[in-house]
Amino acid sequence: MTLTMYLHPLSSYVQKAKTAFYEKDVPFEARMLDGSDPVASEFAALWPIGRFPVLVDDGRLIFEATSIIEYLDARFPATPRLVPEDAMAAVEVRMWDRFFDNYVSYPQQRIVYTAIGREPDDGEDGAKWKKMFDTAYEVLDRRLANRVWIAGEFSLADCAAAPTLLYADWTHPIPPHFEALRAYRQRVLARPSYARALDEARPYRHLFPLGAPEGRD
Ligand SMILES: N[C@@H](CCC(=O)N[C@@H](CS)C(=O)NCC(=O)O)C(=O)O
Image (cartoon, rainbow, N blue to C red; front, side, top):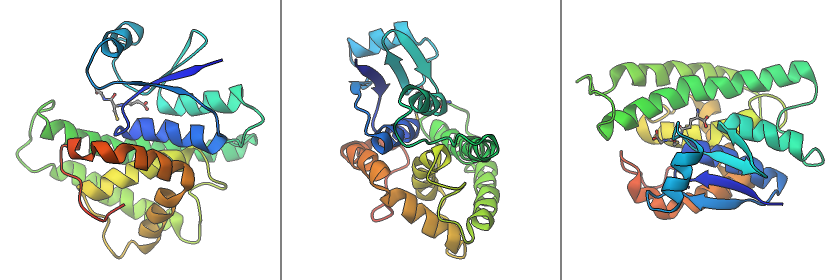
């Protein structure tokens, strides 16, 4: 049995999925997407949408980092769950997973895609995306007062948070007065499962389009 994941280690969504694999200690084979063949052509044929990570398990295709994590919960029921069995607790986890993807990763991706010329430059240095970060930071700081993880036990939502907050802080630093959020960022970055994914990305940091600042991980 081999699970194959198409990935690039620098990708935040790949790091999100990897965190789940490492939490569960489930092995996978990596197919590295560095633009070269045969993997590039293989991936284009497999998933024309072109976004990664994508998982293949015995001919079954699973796309979207969140779905990959939900799949791992279903496929390996004896491993620690990342979406709680309890339906109400699961709603909470899924809600915060969406928060990180939609309100932190989304503006992050707009700023990066503008920097590499994939999306038009609004001439305002990404002001509207940075405002979105500021609002998200405020909501998160409030949410995290007196919490260790974002929604109960370490979960899918924390897998989303770790890479998202890594890059968001590089792009638009979290202000010092958001102490709860800054402490949480440190906590998720230090979680061994995420720390492993983070270490695997270090050799590629020079490729981060906005430049990787020293000492903020
Ligand atoms: N909604 C997808 C987003 C995946 C995504 O945007 N991945 C980026 C890398 S972080 C990507 O594939 N970029 C390549 C591209 O846009 O061509 C998920 O949650 O997995």
